[in-house]
Length: 208
Image (cartoon, rainbow, N blue to C red):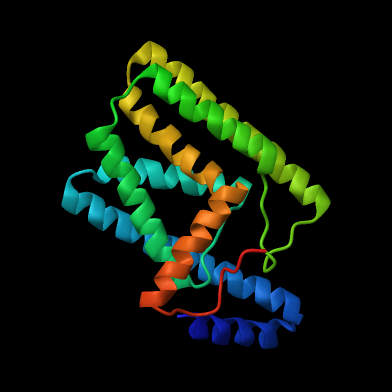
């Protein structure tokens, strides 16, 4: 798939007279969009097949929304990024739907850990999409505001007793915030290396 996005970005570069740096950023954005779209589709399919479509979508959409502000670890190919997205969100949905018992204590624990990770590490950048200092501050502010939004949902869960939905939200937020930590980045790198043994993909999404 990466060869097609490379060709597309080269075509746009010629048409718009873009620099090579901007072409690389464009190619990265195109591959990210495709990877996210395929990942969501896969999560929806597996969630539907195993009976937890709604939890899977809530978790994945929360994590992806947070990632827009926090950045995060990537695999070394779009295909592996897609596979990791499907596996991680489907697993989280299964745990949230079948294993974990919703409680305010568990929800608040997920939330506090997530906020600590965000405050310490967000935003993480990749070399294909460098972040200027003003933009970094804007993303940091956005990440903290997103955290405040999640915090509001946590508080409301205590009064409305809709704790299972909020558990899914905080689980997605926790997973995404974990992927911006040094340990989370290493975990994704190890998974990526394992997948390389059984499936080789293109040359994208390398972590900066």
